[in-house]
Length: 459
Image (cartoon, rainbow, N blue to C red; front, side, top):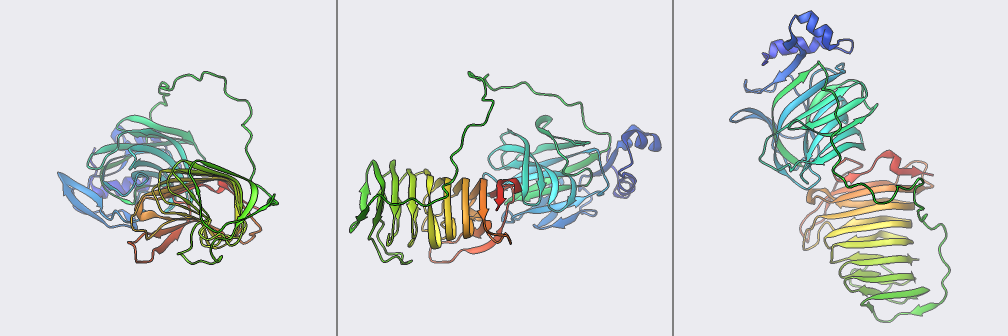
C-alpha cells in the first residue's frame, strides 16, 4: 500500500513504544494499516528524512530514487521515522553504484537511537552481506553470508526487530540473526561508507517479523571433537632479553632462507637516526625467516622483506629509521619479540598484502605500524594485530582509508596510560609520491578500523 506523505506522517506519529500490531489493526480497522511508513520518492523530494553526511538527491532511475553520490564519504546516513518505534520490520530496495574497497558498504538501518547507534544490514564491496550492531566505534557482527553483491544491481534488504531478536534478509533469504540489547527502539536509516548507492521503496511494517527459521548447515561435520578449553596462547613478552653475544655488522646481511641468531645482538649499520638513505641490517629474500635476533644500535634501516617473510622473536633495542620494511609479497608475519625507542614508526608497509603482528611488545614509539601513504605505487594494504602490548606509544596503526586499507585488532593491552591518549587506529588520505598524506580521523568504524571496546584493555 502506497501512503501519501501526509498520511504516512500521521501514522508514524501514532506508532509509539506502547503500540502493538494488534492495536494498530484494531484502531485503524485495516490490516493494511500495519504499514506505518513508506516512501517511493516518486514525488521528487525527500521530505521527512534528515541527513548526516554525504551528497544526497532524489533522481530518476526508472522511477524516483534517493541517491547518495559521494563515494569518498567516510560515513553517510539519512534517517526517518520516530525514536519511539520498537518492534517493526523495515524494508527497502538498495542498489550499490560503486564500492571504494571490499569493506565499503551500502545498507539499511533499524532502531537507530543516534547517528552512530543502530542495527545495520550492509552490502559489502566483498560481495557479502552482514547484519551488524553498531554502537559508535563498536561494531558487532550478528551474522553474514555471501550474496554476490555487485554494483549496478538492485537488492531487497529487510531488517526485522522483535524484542531483543534482530534478523536480516537479502532478497528474502536470511543472512544474519542474533539477540542484542543494543537498542529497544529507534528510527530507520539509509547508510553508505566509501560507496555510492540508490534507495527506493522504503517501508516500515509494525506487524513484526516472520517466524524465525534456521537454515540447514552447509559445513562439513568436524572430524574431531571440538576442544573443551581454549588453546593456549603465547603472552607478549614482559622483559627484554639479555644478549648471548655481540656481532658487529659492517655490511648488510643477506638472508636467502633462514637465519637463527641465537639471541645475539647485531649492531653497527648507519648512524641511528631517521635518515632514509641508510642501509638495512638484514635483507630477507622472498620466503625467508629471521629468528632469535636482537638488533642493537645503530641498526640503519632495520630489516627489509623483499617478499613474504617471517620475523620470529626478533627484538629491536633502539629503532633507528624503521625496525622493518615490508616491500614485496603478500603475507608478512611478526611473531613474538618487541621494539622500543622508535621516534617515528616501527613497521613500514610499502608493498601490497597483509602484515600479521602477534605476541609483540612496543615501547616508546610513534606508531607500531604505518601503511605507506605516498609510495610510488598505491596498494590496498591490511594489518592484523593480536596479543600486542604497548607502552608510551602515540598510535598503534596508521592506514589510508581512501585506498581501502584495513586494520583489525584483538587482545590489545595498553599500559600506563590512565588518560587513554594512545590512539588505536589513525586514518589518512593517501596521496601520490612527492606529497604528504592528510590525517582525516581515527577510531573504529566497522569499515577500515575494525575492533570493539572489548578488544582493548587499559592497564
